Length: 150
Image (cartoon, rainbow, N blue to C red; front, side, top):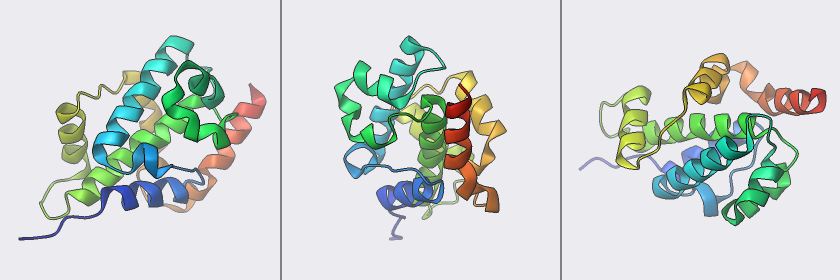
């Protein structure tokens, strides 16, 4: 039997490449990541698209481990987490022939994670959250500039 990739390690590596933290307590397994991303999306929906991670933390105690990125735009962080979820799900399913898109569909449907159209658009505008490219390392810098301009 083939061994699949390590979801938690892939998630952490992807967010690290983006210059962002991903506490293993929140994103170490596909279940935890899907649940915490859903919580984050729910809080972001309530607070609005201009919310910061600090405001998300205030809206839900489950995200307290993210205090280190409190001033960062929630949209940037959630977009990075969704992209990392897709990358990590694809890695975890490497023992199959699944693509990143089918891995994302499997994870989102299995765990009831509904990705809003605005977040899908965000990922399309910022493919570096899912694709290993030279611009990936600039992601956190762009997020901090966007936050400073707000």
